[in-house]
Image (cartoon, rainbow, N blue to C red; front, side, top):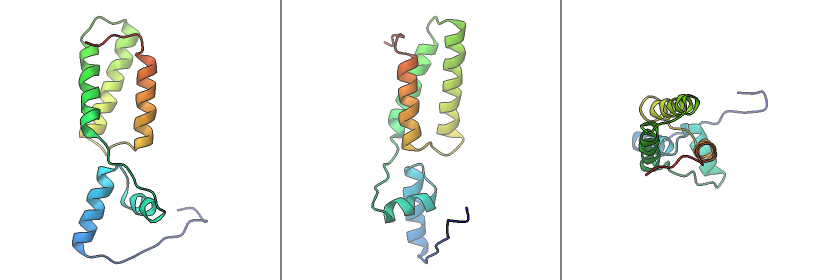
Length: 114
């Protein structure tokens, strides 16, 4: 916490705590970040895991096609990052997902996917 930031604490019951935890995780946020956004009038968006899995599948399909060595290396790196986020770590924020989607769209604009 920086010198200009201050902590805030409140009480809730166990059921409320679990709901906050569940909602924050669904949005890819830490509990404090989720509560702060809600308190400031923002509505964090729930991550669409199905869309992320669909993207992963499509990229796997592309990886099975004949690609240049550089493209294949970059694609496999992207697949590793997606797999890691889906199954090993916390999901990325919606902003990061938008940036990654745009970067993938730009990079693979010339690759056809059936």
